[in-house]
Structure formats: structure tokens, C-alpha cells
Length: 281
Image (cartoon, rainbow, N blue to C red; front, side, top):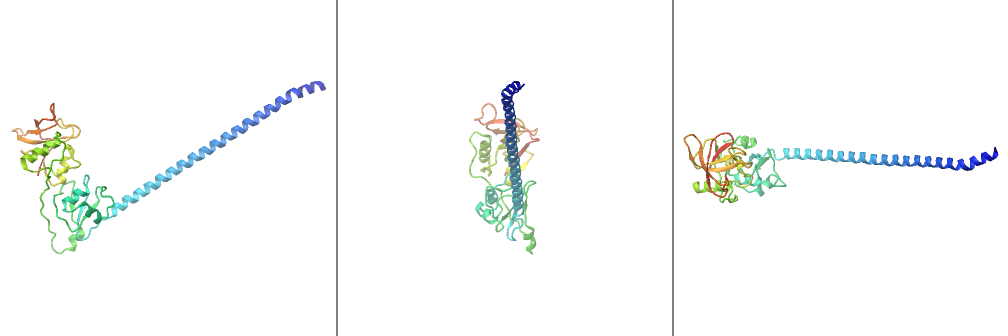
């Protein structure tokens, strides 16, 4: 019996010890993996929390900045005109209309970046300014400061204005915008004054902003403006010049960049209707 016990001890005891050691090693590895996973999970949660904090801070600052802009320069001095920015305005364009320059407007209104103005922003025009163009439309209104009207005992005098004209054709040769501008100049001695944000479909809005006349009824010599996908116009719209008005109300207009020969002047019949306006000075 003693011999069997020694044999069991010599054979099974090392095997049992190795099994216990292997189990202990496995438990240690599982503990390390869990600790590493916990650390990674904690770092991940911490990163998400940090990102959310930064996002909240940015949103808070953005709202504060927007509020600061909205509250700045809301009341102009008694000698100033008050202009409310509409979509599509530029500081240089506003300056031109009031006979001043963008640098003076930026300085007077404490505008740090002259390239950044926003819709409904109030711009104070120093000294009143001489109005170069009418902005009295449904989407673009010239407001007179309440302070200015109450500070003067005599009625506010309005300055007559003449809608501006361009001095050169800035549009690329061969485009419908180039021909419409060139042909209008041939007929009237005047180029259109708008140079930027002036794809064909934008000409109606630009005409309003520069005080030109916009109508639904055609006249010979007016510019016809087609909105995108109207009567064959593509995504940027199309402009042409009315050469004849037919008895049925349709028009014959001269144009370029239309049909099989885009570099030639062609004559196309259009009809007044939705998405069609007629522009003249």
C-alpha cells in the first residue's frame, strides 16, 4: 500500500500542480484582459464626454456671437440712414448705392470682416449718403431710422435717384449673359450694373436690388429672364433680349448659347408666364 501511495504521489502530484498553476495563470490573464477592457472603456467614455463638452462650448459661443451680431449697430445716429441687409447684398454694393465706399461702411459699423454680412443686419450709412439706386421692393427695403425722424422737426427729405448703369460687359463671351448685356447696350447705350451673383436666373433679383424695372409684360428691347428649366432653359436659367412682341403676346428674342450653334446669335420665340420676367432700366 505504501508503494502504491508513493507511485500516485510521484505521478499525479506534479500533474495536479501543473493543472492548478495553469488555472491560476488563466484566471490572471482574464483579470488583466478585464482591467484593460475597463481602462479602454473608461478612456472611450471620457473621450465622448470631452467631445460633447467641446460641442456644447462651441454651440454656446456660436449663439453668443450670433446674438452679439444681432444686437450690434441696431440704432444709428440721427445723421445716418439705416439700411437692412437682404440676401445677396455685399458691402461694396451697398456702399455704391449710397455714394460711399466699403471701407468707410466697415469702419463706421465696426465690421471686422467686410466680406461677411448677413441678412437682416443693420448697416448705418454715415451722413445719410446719396442714394444711387432704389431698393424699394418686397424683398429689399430701405428703412429710415426712427431716431432720425423724431430728432428733426421738419419732414425728412428724400433724394431722387437714377438707377445705376454698368460701364463694361464683364460676362464671358458666348454666354447668354454676355449677349443679353451686349445687345442691351447696343439698343440703349447701357450695360447692366450687376457683376456678381449674376447667373441668368439671378438677374431678376439683381435688377430689383439695383433699382431696375421688372415686369411680367414684354416690351421691345427689354431683357427676358427665364428661371431654370422654364421653356427650355437649363439649370442656370437663360437671358435674352426682346426683338419683337407678337400679336399673341409671345416674343421673338435674340440670344446666344442656345440650340445647336451656341456661339451664334439665334432668334427664339418665348411666351410670358410662370418663371418669366422682363427687365429694363
